[in-house]
Image (tube, rainbow, N blue to C red):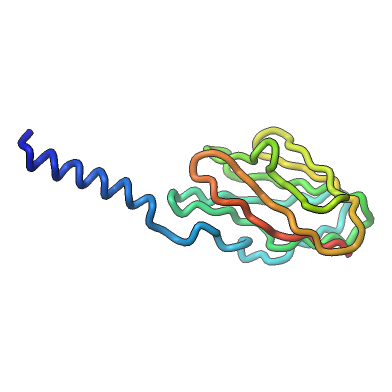
Length: 143
């Protein structure tokens, strides 16, 4: 291979590698166009979708979960994509406030028992693996 061909090949590979750095801002848009998820039972299943188009990966989830049932309520987040992305085993779902006890149920399900009083509570969703987006910060509102 001649020197010019090698240089062109290296430039092409570097360009493709840098393409992964170009993209939208690091903070993905919140939610999935489903701004409110109403929880009216003792157990609520909350879907979380991972849109794995690297480098534009993001999570789709409700912006706010409204809990209108008597507490304690079990909230169960299920990650629909079972490929390279999974919930972080230590911090998959985290609340800054008291009244929430959270734990993983394998790699793709995270459960929290909500016994907090009325109010609005911010929480974070953290995933790990190839194409994991940054931490996301939606809310739960206890009625």
